[in-house]
Image (cartoon, rainbow, N blue to C red; front, side):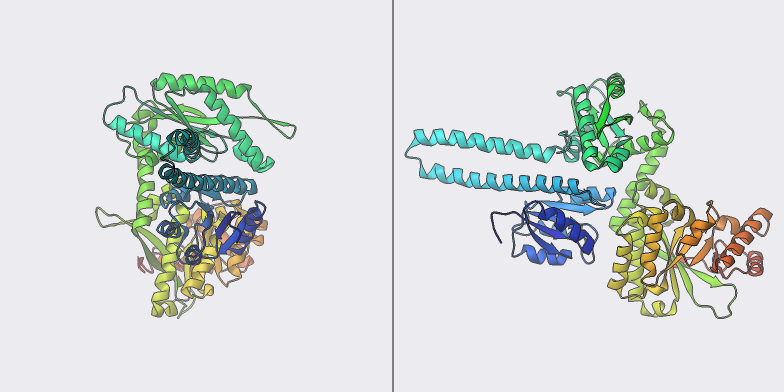
Length: 595
């Protein structure tokens, strides 16, 4: 390879992703190396010296995070830039913790990929030049001692160059290249320092964490392109910078379309003054692109950094929760003055659940349980089971049921992590327990709407099937009816891809949404699962009985078998049989047990 041309190593096990990234990188006059797994990437790094690694998060074998950690142990891997490639915003923090320098979001935006790659290549080049210059300086000091006057003059020039490069490297490491504001890493360092100052009672005034979310960013970014989106962010950042006191205020781009301003002094009055001034600037601001003009609005919330806050991530999650609830309530400007304004215990509860879920995933505190699905029409039925998830309580040793933590998992965007954990562990367990695998005819697994919307989720399932050498025709993936129709295109693609490998699809919680029959006819699902809210009291509730009857008739018109949830007594069983329901599931038949 030509050493004068930078080499980029792309690590991804999805051919289409490799093709897109190769096309983008090839246009930057770079040499390419390609690996389809973390293990292959580590082998290449032992005998090559790339300038940059583009590393996919989710892969068969070792994942991107473990691959990055192992890269850091290699002789040539300590300072090697690593850009994570991920479809999940909540994977970003783990990527930085594993040693990543940056991230690229899926689906790919070509300009973003080029910009981030060029940014890291420039940074890597500067690091190497700095190392070479340092070695050169040391050599020259030893060789030119005899000619001190000439040496001093040359050294002054070179030291100035070195200082410039150090300053430039520090700037690149701490600033966002789109907005020129501080980046998330610098914000983390600044807020963590403020937390320690507040906890030690050294703060003269309560600092405020101000979160600004640009409401129209996604509209402009999707309709006008990512270049327009970046330009919008740059112009909003200029408005924010115009209002900041550089001695006391700290402005940063948190992620995507979110900005943060930390006001160290002035308390509530300083926040109110900032909001008034910023709102006035927004009223006068028009974003122009391709002969079109856009008026902008933001959701802005401010909360104090108090002594009971222990980490930067906690502050961010709490501020994001306040911003989210404010948007839902139609409130676009909110200042938290005290615990009562914050409805503190409610938000802290959500936050604690988010942290507990993350700990549960990292410590393997989740458990896979199962419940049998019993035939109502066959004497010797096939054995079907549904997989259920439980979370172990470290303090009591008891089990926590999904209704307590699923809302928080959905709120913080980590429900897909639970889906992947359950699928990975269920398939691994079934692969090891060959007797159980041979005995079971179908295994049902619930998947969330967030997972279905992820482009690589179906590939993840198929990879797990192949890795564990399991027959896909034995698996049925359950998608809720409402979410299936809300995300019709994504759901159809997901169903079709799994159908190709023999997997079945069930529409779960059927009857709670307002389905269009035409849409249902267009979805490639295999069976209908009636929501338990109609089943559990259908023997005493005529309306719910009528709903079940209607759904069963609809299913028979479509030639789809029906499963009834929450079957609790024999009266319900008898009614379901009369209606022609084929399958029942509930405590009347089987109480869930650990897989």
